[in-house]
Length: 623
Image 1 (spheres, one colour):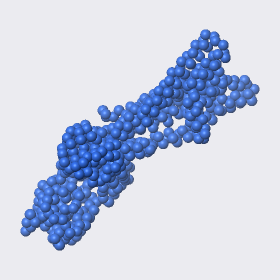
Image 2 (spheres, helix red, strand yellow):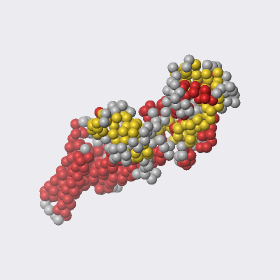
Image 3 (spheres, helix red, strand yellow):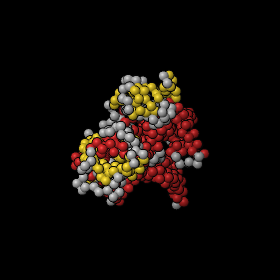
Image 4 (cartoon, helix red, strand yellow):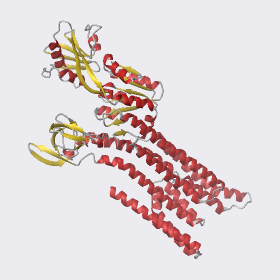
């Protein structure tokens, strides 16, 4: 595919060079006084060489009933210029148009380059371990549960868990993080990352088509289908603008001379046809239809190279207007790695008994707080049955006893009396009686404070936290980060309502950041939903408008800066192109400008400048 694109560009370059030489020969022969038929022949060959591909594309457009695209307009303008004797200008129209096409292809190629690197995320081959025998197979043939060998320099073929060995893993291609991470038995590896040293044996967690790398590619591909407000504006604008200017050109070139002829004046057909053709060249909307989508394409590609995945240009528009940021606590503002800091048994309850009962009840829970409690009694038996209460905790059968483990709200709902002064993260009751609680701590992420400050510098008015955790755990985090608001003990429905209320205030766009499956509805509701892709659930990533492939919150301010600059570049191109075209359209229609060279600049020149401006959206490293 890459080779074919390269050949196409070479063909265009040769077309421009050959057409340019022939144009120069025509101008020279005309200046030296060569016979008119010979001069015309040279110009005709120059037009044929430079315009043949454009004519073919225009013909295909006619067959598709798309009569008013830019190639049709250029064909009419160049042929019309020859009809009125402006040979050099007719050839120049085609040459400059081809030059503009070349710059467009170059810009698109550069934009694609940042995304094309993502295609290398998914290796074609993998080494599967069958017993002690290593066999090389297609990565697509891997199944969950397969054991694979990852050697130094290998790209991880599927999401997997390390069973044996240690190594440094380069995650930059997936998350944008420059520093490698250490992998050891129990570590989870994402497909697309690279083993720098050491030999690993790992168990495949999911097949290649549903892996992290596959999701990245899918998100980037889908992103280019979702148009921004500016792109939709250009689409709607072109449907009205192009037919209007073609009609205006016809009226200018034919209608005005007929009116003059009817009124008894000399019609001046050649002059008015020249004005109409100049008007037609100026009116071609190349700068708009090329540069605006290219701006968003470049922004999406540049962001993807930094591990920030936008699901379309429309998401960039919304993110550029964010004024309120809401964050989940666990795994977003905090590290999500819990440890029990205090065990508080009720009066008359043995500490070891409290720990054993709670660890058994939490035995099969996937919640990180449950893992911290289980760590105190790793050999505790599994409960006979478990019922999970969303956002509240669990009800379990432990050795025939009904055990409640969760929030104070859960125990109160079940009629358990809990002392008013009891403080903890997890409250435990056994057969209707409170037996104690656990205080579990979660460290604040090192980058959280800096992220909050940077968001405020970007003009975000409110940064807050919405969490299902207990108030006594949420309050220290909110105070340490100087958040504008913090609400705790929220069920998924409560979070949904809280974000809905913020959106209803209409004080700018509302952004929500989360990582868990319970965050998926809120992420989908927010004006911009952000999933922390490195640790996020599939449901959260699917619902999100923006995915941060690392679990680093400091990518969020950068995403906002990328979005704002991309939108600004698109707006600059719209204003610049329309202003220049409008000015020269007026000059051409009134006869003040009779030069088609200036018209060519208003079309191709403006398009090239707009494309070069759009390419700035690719440069995101220093934002």
